[in-house]
Length: 172
Image (cartoon, rainbow, N blue to C red; front, side, top):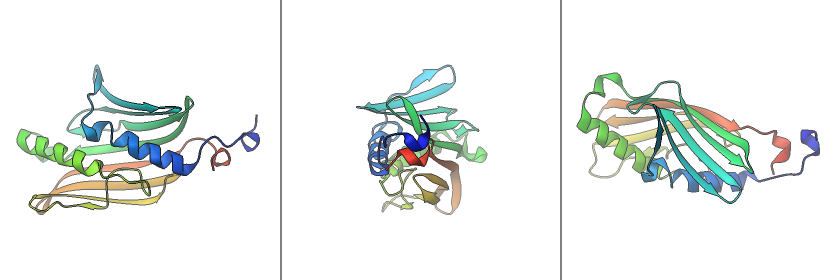
């Protein structure tokens, strides 16, 4: 059946709501990862929706980090990312642990209007760390970058890009 003849299967609002729920119940929430050799994965499923975040590496995700959403088994949305701790800070175990713990707190603040990563700014009072994120586009087609700063030096950066996979004609 041609894409323009298919029945609408989900709405962008439903997708955004599911993304927020999935993201706040996986990596950012500390869900235990499945580790397959060097590949790490976290998953969340609810009714017809499925979410999987797959990545290689810990300090940095060099060229392989993918979040995928499926609806009724079909891939409908993806986000690819690359980045992590800057090389000069990777051997500082205490800073690395503090940074990724802080990142998870920022990622828990994802919202439905831009369900990609964390908020534009997360700078809790009393913390020396600050999370910043900027993006262009919407849930259908976007790109962005996030960073974590320790006082005035950048210690973590990540680029991301993604959007819907299925033809727009089959979503509301």
